[in-house]
View 1 (cartoon, helix red, strand yellow):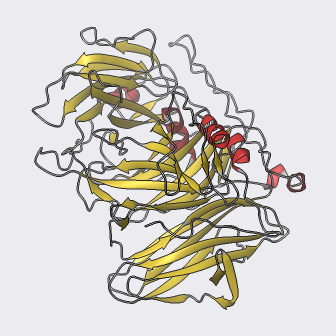
View 2: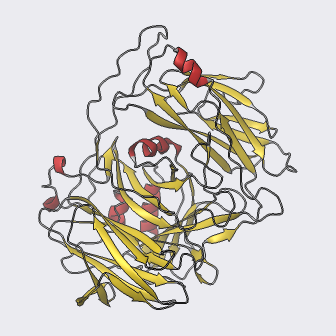
View 3: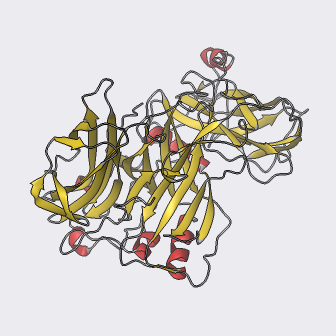
Length: 567
């Protein structure tokens, strides 16, 4: 069953929808297309918990060694890949991505990589499961703007003879300021033991391994029909690698905060692959493009986006090679769909009810063409998106709800992104859904990061608020029923920056049912993000005194939005 409300329209002098061409040529994340997060299911809306055909991921990657080091310190690693099914003894390929900025790589002469002189990344081909590969490197130098810095390194694996890296693990390396000369404290850190390893959930071949099925829809605005030209413009831009989705996932199930490494949860094995689909409504997909981890942006997300001790960031984007849209495309209604599955150890209840916050980010300094001259009067010193720095601009956070069929019984649906100018009116459409067999009394609450005067009304017609019927703080939802409403704001003349509207719904039942969603609105003109700070070049003489770190030529500007991971 298609979800209604995926045509959030505005008209008259309200804020305008950007054309798909403008978006494809400028910013992926600020496209004013309705962004709705929901699951697909057999026979209708949800469930999005699905059993995998395989009992569990075929491989498990392990990264052993210190997690906290000084800058310029020697770091030892033991890399290995185990087969989760003991009967699987086939050889495997291994890929190692050391932290960005690491240097002076050394390898065990008994198990060297196939490309010791051309990496990173470094690969080992045809390795028996359980083989231990010992490597070492010099940890990266860091800039003085950090009191400490977090970098990620990755281990990927696949059965030999296959093309896709099916399993990924990541290890955070926390770097504290220091010189290239190793200290007694650094040696102690380097040899400190790891925390206990995590254990996967349903690892027995006769057990069912469950994953979460996620679909993130971006619906084209009315009047933007799908053509081959627009499809190609969109796909070409997304495949350039300058846009990405950063999603924060909880360390639950197979992953725990104290574990030495993290099993990245996107599923790449079996018959499942993450993908981006160009999908005309009511017709077959016009194009399917694989998604991949964008390892070069993990460090940015860990250090610049909001973090908690019990969560970690992952970054996805469109993969190469270049894709060609089919000729003769013509559809009045269509969507771009990000589809992927998340696994947290195979237990069907793990992460049930979690809200995964995520951002859309773009690396580039050119002003998007959709910012009109009238909006360019906003001063750079006063305009801040959610995050802007290091040459990257991010919009969010948006909320992705983890749901399973009729659980949770209360759902608050639709999440939006858009851009408007002061003096314009903005309308966002949402709806509540009661999946239980009894009536629910629901309390609505909202918060605005910019303190804007949002009002809420029932719907007069499609995407039109009924100003004579304001929505009160309490709504009665009939069993298996829905309640549609609009969030409306007339932007004050002085409004500027990025607005995050958070909506919360809760009941008085015991236990309390709750639901959450959010909208992101960019108000005003474009600001070129500050560039990254200067790269620190290690001193060529390891025995010399540490060289003072250069002072960055510009200070990144950031406004961190409150992010709460709910479970």
